[in-house]
Figure 1: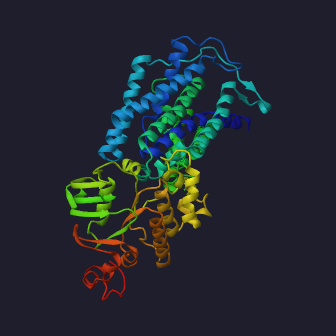
Figure 2 (figure 1 turned 180 degrees about the vertical axis):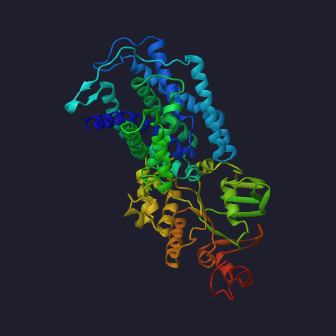
Figure 3 (figure 1 turned 90 degrees about the vertical axis):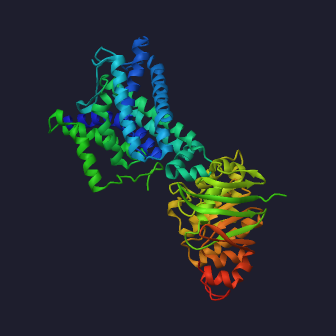
Amino acid sequence: MTEILQLVLVGVVVGSIIGLGAMGLTLVYGVFKFAHFAHADLMTLGMYLAFFVYVDIGLDAGHIGPFSFGWGMLVAVPFAWAGVAAACVGVDRLVYRRLRRRGGGFLNLEIASLGFAIALQAVIQAIWGSPPLRYHNEIHEALTFAGGLKLKPDQMLFIALMPLLAVALYLLLHRTRLGTAMRATADNAPLAEASGIDTERVRTATWVIAAALTAVAGVMFGVQSQLRFDAGFEFLLLPMFAAVILGGIGNPWGALVGGLIVGVSQEVSTEWINTGFKPAVPFALLIAMLIVRPRGLFGSSIGGSG
Amino acid sequence: MSALLEVDAVRAGYGSVMIVHDVSLRLERGELVTIIGPNGAGKSTLLKAIFGLLPVSEGAVRLEGGEVTDETPSHMVRLGVSFVPQTENVFPSLTIRENLAMGGYQRSGDVAERIAEVLRLFPELAERQKARASHLSGGQRQALAIARALMLDPKVLLLDEPTAALSPVRRGEIFDRLQAVREGGVALLMVEQNAREALAISDRAYLLVDGRNAHEQPGPEMLANPEVGRMFLGLDSAEGENGA
């Protein structure tokens, strides 16, 4: 039983990372109406940009309290956010926006985003190489709790960070003029434009907000595991899509819950199946959901349901 | 003095397929003008071309004498022209209040005050401000679409079949509201299939046939015109059944 509970705990950590990434992915889908295949590689970009500031520049001295990382991470994460946001807005201006205006349909955008994903991966590999990297090389001890359950302080932080970021996104979408305009654009972009909303500005803001979630999730993955140039494509893309579909495409809260379901089921499955088959779990969930309930558990609107 | 809105020999359509050929019309301040005509006459196409949703291939659109041909919809809104599409004219996942706030997105500061003003015209919406637009009835949704378009206090309101698919009672309510909007000083240019009720309240009306001007007359006179009634309204006489 303790073993299963331990796997559930690890699953919640992994699910938090997947869920945050999936929230960004589903937000982009809601506003742009296409599945952004490059999203997982943008997470990889985020983890490497943080590595650049934290390790390459040399801000990795010391630790914040019990955590494995030091104060330099507080500079590295915003830098990663800015870099991922710049990459998103840049590719939108150069490629996606042109395709949108040409009216070629979502398929062109899908293929363009797949191309962007492959290019990103190649650039990351060219700059930082293929061998895995780490923010820190020393081993960090886990804390032991009642029943022998173990969790590292970093992992506890990730579990706490997820609801905080989710609440921040909720407040942004529901309590601000920009957030309401994002939901309006997601609902009906031509009407939003005919109402005088600057929909291009709304789209740019959507990239910047999604980039924040993506970069944070990327750094979390890097801290929890290791940095690999193909981490996004190999370990995150499919679970994120499964989370998005589970939660209802376009629904950020659904994506978060979907992420937790994917994370926990992935980890718990290793009790019965070989770890090597773990990636098949989100794929099976995704297929089952598409067949049984294609609109997801919570409906498909940025507002949260319907 | 130039007309508030003037459409001068406009040709427009979808891609290379022209639907509207050489159509002219004008809308004066405070007027309610209706465009009627059989299906496929180009009424909705004309309205979309005026608002910049479709390109104008020839001719000109002028607002208070200044050319606004092919301006973007968001610029038209800034110039004081609002548009109510026939369908998909509200944000379904937003509440009534949020829909109105988005209609007034370009306003600065006094959005709440303007929402209160607009809701005085639509009391049934005022009672349900936190209801999602997707939960509204057809009539309430249409009322919300009009209310949303009024949020920027436009000079001109373009309406594409505002009573389509509504029951006679709801149609009557919408026409009453539109008259109230006109009395508030907004000029209305409306495409309408429920021609009899629309003509009865219109200052003037245009009949389009095959994308061309066929007739122009004050609304009630067009309703009483036996030739128009027989040919395009499906009436045996001016007192007969409506329909276009």
